[in-house]
Image (cartoon, rainbow, N blue to C red; front, top):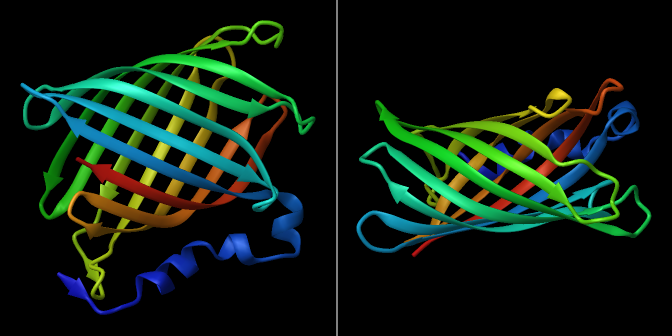
Length: 225
């Protein structure tokens, strides 16, 4: 199905909370999240993947968190795949200008299928988080579950498709359920093997003192070799 409407107009409605002022900006934070993802097939169902992120708070003024990773994956049939990998993350500590390193070995189990004309995927991810010496932070063990749904509808000559994602975070070590990301937007194929996305993310998080919220502009570039 193809619908002649502007994906940029849809994206504008998605990111309206970022552009509004008044009470919303006073009560919550705003920011951005920029993603760069690679996938390189190897042989016999093996592949390399890399998911990288840089994110800001207080609008676009303060880039305070980012990570780079590399994963080795294997296709387990038409729908399932598994990965093991390592992620190196950086976090600015409390706005002081000092950066803290975090080391995250991980494993994930991924599922992808078609539900009619809709694309559905779900990822189970386990992370063991250790921190640089002297940071005072204890090691942590975390589970993340991400679900993605991509609609079959295409918008304008870009053939952009709406998508929605939900990712929940659960700390086994302490804190329990402490993060939730809800993302919606548009994604389209720029050229063969290259997909772009633009959207809005509502990020809810807590550290034991009530829930906080951040509204983010999300961009992404996915490259499949």
